[in-house]
Image (cartoon, rainbow, N blue to C red; front, side):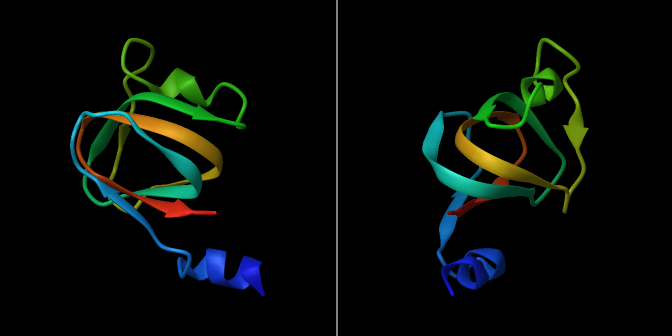
Length: 84
């Protein structure tokens, strides 16, 4: 049952709209507006390549990234980080 709650976001999360480092145990992040990630730590191979200083990819609003994410820092924009 825990996985169903996680998939629905019922385990909660945090809204991040600043450039401070945010840590936790997240299974997904969803951009709520166009967002640029400064740094991200996860189990997704080469995910950090989308960060500032590499490709500086803009994640459009409503874009989701899934994985075991332990930290994220934004350059701009906002995301909701959903708890595992």
